[in-house]
Length: 204
Image (cartoon, rainbow, N blue to C red; front, side, top):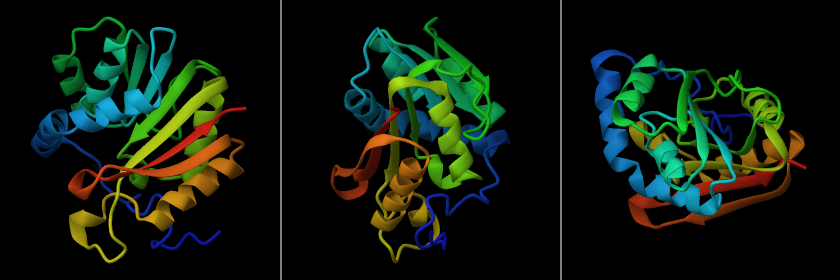
């Protein structure tokens, strides 16, 4: 498979991560700006009070809180302590727990989740195949996996490249297929600056 930056789903794997005052600033921005995408992911995943959700790269926890409002139990996972501290400060729901971890090392038991999602973080994963394998491990049979990334143009530069082109979305879908997932779909949602790619899959 071609893993050039033009097609790699993790084309920003060298991102240094979030820390300190800068990380806190970006976390607060995410908390405000991420509400629409949080509603989208819980709708697409059809989250209910029967679900156990793992949110990979949860940031300040906006999507985790949206899932908990549907009655789900949620574990928010993020590699950045500053994000987890902010998530805890913004959250009062006992159905949510927070854990430091990465896509490649999810702190959960085998088959612990009925739903796993990752929003705007896969383009930072260090090892896509390992991350997909971990998602497969922690999902129950029949569990749903959703990946959401901002839709970007192939000729974008700088900050505008943080997301996926259509090729990068299809590259991730191919990784899911190779990782043993079924019912894989790649769809575009929204328009303009709010447009996103959604890759969904089911663990057999």
